[in-house]
Length: 494
Image (cartoon, rainbow, N blue to C red; front, side):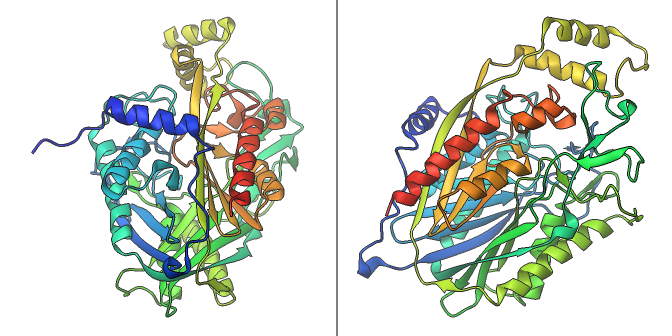
């Protein structure tokens, strides 16, 4: 039997383009259904996406082959149905998944379940110990592959199958919302320092801030931005109270601390297991699914740069973080108030952003670095890696269309942004959202690199470097504006 390949048909591409052009005017209905159909349903599933050994782990500067599976990777799926509108939310254990893989999954989901792409939110957790789903030379989605690799096709298929299985598990349900906070594990990793030797960059210049500076260094002055310790969560139960799923959101980067060559879902996977254990939901049928999504954590990790440093064994720190998050969600779980029904809605749009390009002088430097066979650094230890990125950007399109999506769950709004988003962007969206509760899932529907604010761009630092960040420096303002406009439209739809 001939397998469907990752190459999208022209008909499907046209359908996506037309849908994006019409959005956000084209939105899922959020009207209350007639009384006889007023039934809220939900279903969940977990689809195994563990890759074969030998695939490249890309969480570090240099890819290494996967040598061992410490814990299996999953696409954790949730489907909600208010009688008029269905939504699917999927979190995948991966560092970042390009849009073409997600689009193929959405194509199959639409073909098999008639679920429109605008109503399907697919995202990566950002574990750094998973193998790559980027394929060959996609450069964070700017130049997508037309033919997908075997693992990309496998991943797309398993995501679609997971949504289909969650759909098969739909049953009458109730939904509630909670929130808690874990401030002890979130720190802004960008620091002002008063020592220029700590601030050099690959371009030969000096930044104003340093990402991940030496711990307890005498020249650290202050962090360059805020944190967001809040953990909002959604609880789904059967009408009789049996747990179906919990979807939580925490604005913390991956934790790491794995053995070399190990594949792991990081603290996101451990949370899924621990919340199931705490709720005594390990042996339910259908299985309970715990899901932890990554919030706006592009500049956030769990290193206290001014505090005492402790030496951890492999997996010890991520287990500690997952335990704290799960325990705090569990403590708040008992106070959740549930709704037997609420309206669902979704909107999606395509936002054009200019691609940043290297200057002639930078291209000249890149070519010189490429030709230099010595191991000596001129400006920075990673300059040759960035030289490759500058040359690739020179060949990239001038404009990239990025998907932006919002969901409505009653008075809860969820933003889906395909970047590693700086925390202050998420805080602004929360503050200005028309919904009572709002959170953002990053690396959703694609993966396009880091998203700093214009102010952070002016400070410099790793996340702003050309090749780490790839789109115009004002992109965050355009994205925030677009997200809030879609939120307003959804909120007004009754």
